[in-house]
Length: 279
Ligand SMILES: [Zn+2]
Image 1 (cartoon, rainbow, N blue to C red):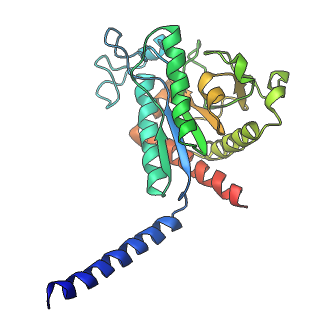
Image 2 (image 1 turned 30 degrees about the vertical axis):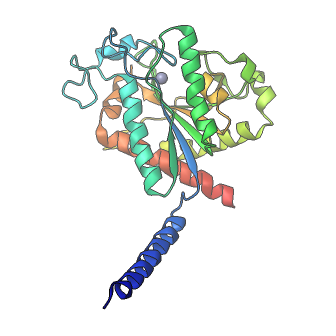
């Protein structure tokens, strides 16, 4: 066999194999979909304690969470406190893997470099949303964990954006979706689709149990004028997975297995959402 006789069948085989691979990719449930994933906040600045979030988005010290210690936990600081940015990132990375293994593309929106001034924080948040907007993501899931003034505050919460973009400011208290403050956005596609995605997430999270334990919903859907959900162009849901200041919630969130199940629930909700888009 001369060189050409060998090369041509070999090339044909490569073409056939790559076509098979493409067809297999097309059959994956999230083929052609783009999911933006925001891991809320970022690691602390060099002069900040390990248990805090960085200088950026919705910075909060979570002083209550420092009292719940999980020494030796993979996400914990040397003092045993688990910082919110690390918890959010862990769930977000797990979700990213699941989305990509189902053929979806992901956009990682967190930007860790930040100027710790109000202006720097605002431009960082805008830049995060811009990443999702430029990639023309179909949806954005913004992952956070909550903190409350009382150790009894517990449960997961789902928040969608529902005021005019002009009025967006960081850290506004979320309000009930039925409130008249949501009126300007109620008829928009973004609002309706965000609510639809939030409902799918709610359906999945409400069924989640781990070793008999469960984080239940705190209360009905919330609306808010947070920066990221407001400046993102696509349907966006901010998920507060539980309260870091509540022992019951935090004991579950500290478990790798529980966080995997949260990621799985979010992934299934994304599948449900796109499935209902087809119908
Ligand atoms: Zn947060």
